[in-house]
Image (cartoon, rainbow, N blue to C red; front, side):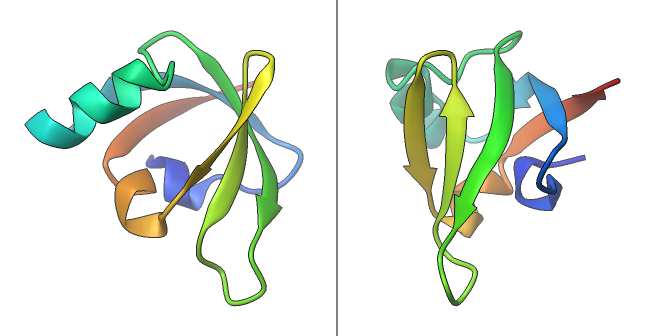
Length: 74
């Protein structure tokens, strides 16, 4: 499952970030494998989305969110 498929009310753990240049940028923002994420907001037309990550909020384009693999947490 990818981050762009996460729905409100569900939490997930990042398992992998694909794309060499993108992964470096996301790692610098704190999007590391093992981090807990939760969907916070979605823009009116569906792009971008806001993700709660640790104690911060990160906004991502849907194209970038597709490159982040996640695993749902029960």
